[in-house]
Length: 142
Length: 416
Image (cartoon, rainbow over all chains, first blue to last red):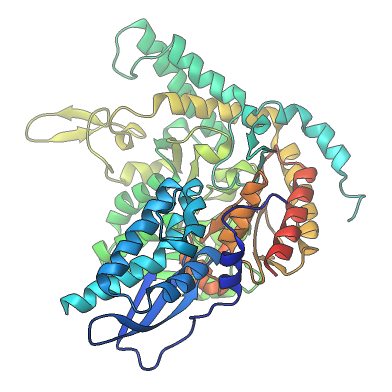
């Protein structure tokens, strides 16, 4: 079977055995995102520290391997980061999936760069990030 | 596998000439031979349709119904000849009962706006749990606009229409219109249109059948069925996009107000008022899809040259073959097992999301649909968010089914 660059080991591993999945009873921030085209849904739960940095974040994802892996890699990556840093990473991921070239510093998130060949699947990887951005913006505007 | 029913060799022989008519099937995708298993979304086009449309544009194109010159008159003749052809194809009583629309969605919206506008608060429209959004959302909009009731008849666990529930829904006599699919685009279920129509008529309701999926698989005769409205779409009939058909009984069309206003649908116009053209032109405002309509004519001629007997036999055999082949794939579950079904097979696979299935099949040249198939309420009823779906056409071969099953088995191994 011809496999796809997209399903790299890190993506499959995180989809099968996520490290940051599950509820977070102490969460002070909750957000969610849904893709009406496929029914994928991501729920996010977070606690921020006094400086507005993400202290803890968990996700509950019902979706494909790409979406589930993206949510889990995201959760690991944004822990300890503030809204501005999250926004920068989100923008770099968008650039990676649209151009196929990952900006330096994306790290494991570069696994999603092959999505530039799968227009219909880009939103799968971006859904957790747009949910996170919305959640942090809602908190800022509260 | 029951070799007495079908053998790949037998089928390949009978299909060789059909496949040669579809230029796209010789394409490669990701370096692999294209295996196109998404005909329920939109069927591929035979060269007879492609050539007809191109030839018309090259040699005989002008706007219709208004040009007082040779070219326009010839194009008008070609366009109107398709109306006769569609009337024969659907078994209509008269050519005036054939209204051209952009697709079946527009045809249903036309009925919802125009016939729906004649309904009164307290009356109801009844749909089923397996409807495509196209046969649900227009009725929700009508409900909100007109203050009517929208009822939903459930399906049974195997994916058939629950006929007892249908009878209960019709019992109070408030249902003015039953709008129901003739074949589910998700479950493959072919509904018992005749029984539904008899029950609906006995309860005083008209019936609209959404034939988008069915009309390519089985011969439809709207008069034998006793239907009141029937809709089809050209692109699933091996024809072009942008052309669909509403058939309705002439007296219904005559009683209905126009849907869209503009050129061609009028009789007289002053600055104060307008009067309407006769049916069907009352419902065909503006320059229509001329080339696409002529292309639809070529598609119908193509289908009829093969014949529904051969098409039905091929698809029934292929569907049985596929159900058995897919049934042997580890962790795969076919969704929808109604006894009357066509060549549309939805499935899920344990631990593998339908989108991942579709992407990995695509890498192997195999095109399937994955998602909610524009039937979100049905997905909820089935307890899934999405399914993968393989659907067949006259060009689909048993070897392609074998390749699908084998690749699915490999995908399962990849994830588990």
